[in-house]
Length: 149
Image (cartoon, rainbow, N blue to C red):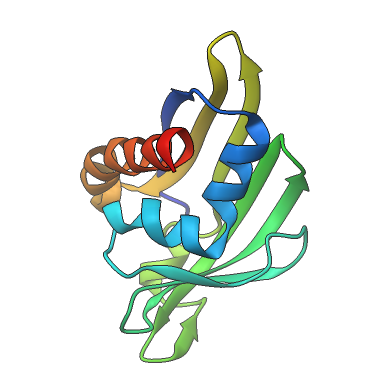
């Protein structure tokens, strides 16, 4: 039985959608804004629909996911499937089956003041406060990166 709740965040970034999309999803940009969650975090994989993504900490631990949907400059849906620990993928432990799969969605739209970015994330209860604290910092980092380089 999945035990998740959805949390939402949004921000307006005074930059074109193309800039926000590129800086959010590029290797260098991703490393910048996700440092709010874990300094040194990075990904391995492709943002294309159906592709596997590995979201990793410097130690190599992290999460494994697939890209459930990819609509360029509009929408990315990440389907989180399990944890990575000590180089091993875990899709079946109780720690994973209690929440997986869980979706993390990014919506990009043009607003009157720039790009409106909406984040929807399904999260296990034990990570909710961490995400509530970290997402606003991450989005502010992304905003700075997009508006000021």
